[in-house]
Image (cartoon, rainbow, N blue to C red):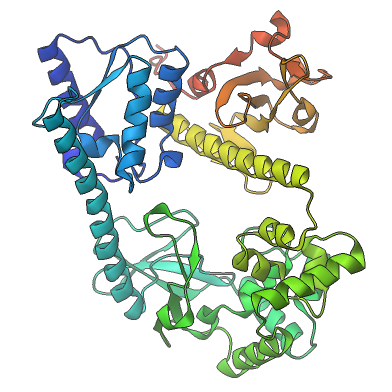
Length: 497
């Protein structure tokens, strides 16, 4: 369920499935759910992925999976993708049934045709809804309302009611709670405004470039809007943010229907000039844009790659800092945007060995899996009645204000004797009460299990983790994070008499 609409609420689906199971004489032995998740892509569906994992690895003690209707299985934009997940269940001996559909999923020609139509309708509904939402966002942006994105240092989001009366300032990760409410941009704290003005003065009047400005701010202990040290691209984001002169600019990039980020040409941007109170003079902002244009002339893709190739020949290696510090080379951000990441640019100029490229791709995928597990843990703790927060600078999770959790992920390496093993280096680097190591299956596509242990129990462990590590360690290995979530549960024990 991706929204709170009554028709598809989780409780309504559960009631319908219970009624169907009672009529069919089924016993419900397990429940998989994806609350607040979009059905467009399996990457955002931990419940569905766990279902497939349990079925394909012999962990399922059931013969039938009951789903409310075809759209709850997923609104995948390719009907073949939707069918593939059902087929994986079928070849493992588990059938899928839809309790709210008017056809039996029995493999007959009629049911297969109806199911294919329903899958196409589910995908088309998402496309139509996406278009309607987009048109609504365009209208709101042209009226001067903030409809998404990061506002920037020195600015805050103010929620107003339908009559334009202010209600409250929204903190990070907070959103408006009524559809009739709107969000506008207002000036933030004076110290942040002073930092923004300092950046423009250093760039325009002192003629410092982005790396120099970042170093200047970091040397004085001034943090960015995320509470982290400054980077060159962060300074560039401030210098090009038209919100500082009161302009609302939206649709610079889009990710419709969970696709990859696409950067739109300027003629597709949605603009509303003078929508907010400015904190930088237009004259100073225009001067900064002129300097940026003179420093970074338009270059074709071939010219950008030639400049990067020359830079690699000069230094013998490449990094974000080396690219950003080179005067005749575009920024690392531009290379990333043009070539699908720096790795794509490195491959095109031949400075990255195939083996290293392979491991970089694996590390990137594992980082995504780790962050997704952390998000799922935060949701699960909240659902269990506890409270969990994550420190952005250390990524340490604090549960109920009582204990801290560090999550790491280990790539599976297979020895020459075909025995899997996992590195324990992250154990020595973790600083928390509980350490969680996500161990991957061979191939590093599927999570194998979780090592959940108190830090003092494994802090002295040296070497690699193996399939069998002895009772002292294997006692802390679990198939899911449920034991950790159980620590967050709260139970009422009554009052003292």
